[in-house]
Length: 414
Image (cartoon, rainbow, N blue to C red):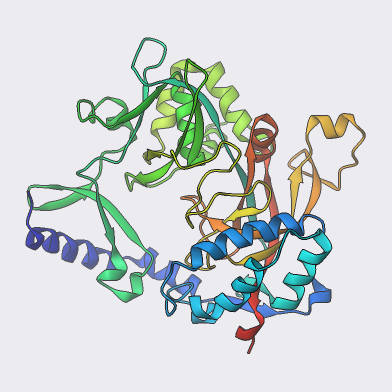
């Protein structure tokens, strides 16, 4: 056992180092330029009712979650402009009272209940939008020569520290580590865990048949595992080791292995298949390692649970940086998505090409319900596309510029 006193000493050391970090100061300075710019509803790019009913259903799920928050809790701790839970409840109660509605009726609800604001960093409204999906893997409860790659539960010695509890300027920032003697040290990185340092602790939920599939499952954060008897289990993000996330696609570009314009999840997978002897070293460059929990509370027809604690809705749930935007907020997204081979074969006309990829316009009402390690910045989003091959195809190739407008309850309008 370690003492709280020892852990306190560790935190003092950690916080003193953080306090002297010029990079963190630069990041906080950049965050200070965050702004919301009011616009007229008629200025919304491509505002139309298509899909609004599905977005309303997603918003209703967020409202159910908001009911459980303290009424005086801020929606975003350091951003009073988003108000408190109490400020959002009238519009939530109205949404929850609506029966099944048409797209047009749902659009009217959002138009009448909210006011739109462009999200910007300084004068820049543009950012990067990517996609993610729910992978499906093959696995077994018992380790074998075929199923040998474990999905782990969080270890009991993993310490999670919310730095905002110790310094208000660091609210929203977290550290993960373990205690060694009387020191808080970083938790084991990916390579150490893959070498078996956690073996014998009973942390294994299930064993899957591919380390590469496991790696991409950790990037996505949740997934489905099909067992030998064809039964299904769902796993979701529970914690991470706190080591920095590294985008290995960038490494492949810098190594000259994949051209920048050809980079996608599919390109990374193909490179690993072509170079199996180098795949493990590449994956270990990303020291971040995700721990899972088994989700027995999910209907097979529902999406995985996002960071807000509600099931995600394919095509209408967006992962955002929760330091800037509140979970549950409606957003009008203006971006692009890759066209599938089936769409192109059927004669779909691309709106544009991005890095050689034919794309369609993506103008859609989304709900902020999730986050991710790579989702950093005020104008940065990750679209949840669902499960299955089509979702994987679109998500893996989506890498589009775009912007979004956040909807705030009319009562919060200045």
